[in-house]
Image 1 (cartoon, rainbow, N blue to C red):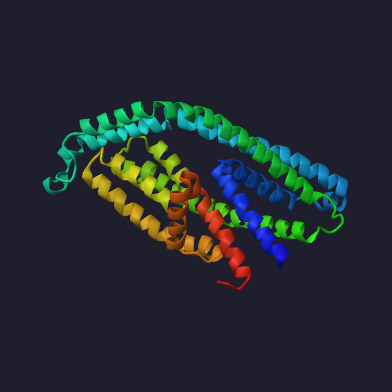
Image 2 (image 1 turned 60 degrees about the vertical axis):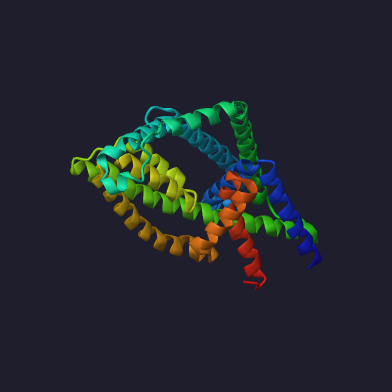
Length: 332
């Protein structure tokens, strides 16, 4: 028991250090590569599994392929959001223009809630950018550092997958065995949360794409930057609860560029889709960790207050891990 307590303390300290020193991208990248290699290795032919040497070589090759695929995917995502089709700056500028001209299209009772002039808002944004220019210059350097962390994390994840493929050697000491169990539970929490959220986000994105690219054009409504909105829906949807608020707000605001009726239709569609998503959450995520949406939201709010954006991203995974530990001890 004392080894388990020590392992819990070390695990908690490690997770705190990861968030405090901005190492979350490395952790997530490592866990992603580890699970992808593990899943692919489980499907290797039986003749490879029978030979430890052949299996180790096959897993090593899979690790290289997975690292290349993940790195290529990340590069593709970055390239898309820097292109004209997916530029976030273009989308934000378009949303600002829509809000500025929306008063003329809204009923009088609703227009009263929209500011008459947006020049003050824009001036405030300009002043903020000037005041924080030095901080914004650090963003590029931090992005490069985060990329290095991601690459290192992927390599570590691949090395752990290779280690798992090796033949079993002598048993671990008690503390090492307990730490390994904590790592296994954390990795399992990552698998349940991330892969489940990818499924939910994919379903949500498919319906959103059908609505924006098929249904609305059939009625003569062509929403600007529809492809960007679809991409944002998927990537924002990877963040439970909060991601939906981000993508939904963007879709409704951009729909206002056509008419208030189109915006109301978009809002009604999103409400219906997210009612369906509640069932998906309950079945996919909730059944996996026994957590409801309000539990995850509280965890995300608390982690955001403590660690910022990284805390929001880590909260569902860390909460799932914590609940798994408590459930294993019969505490919840």
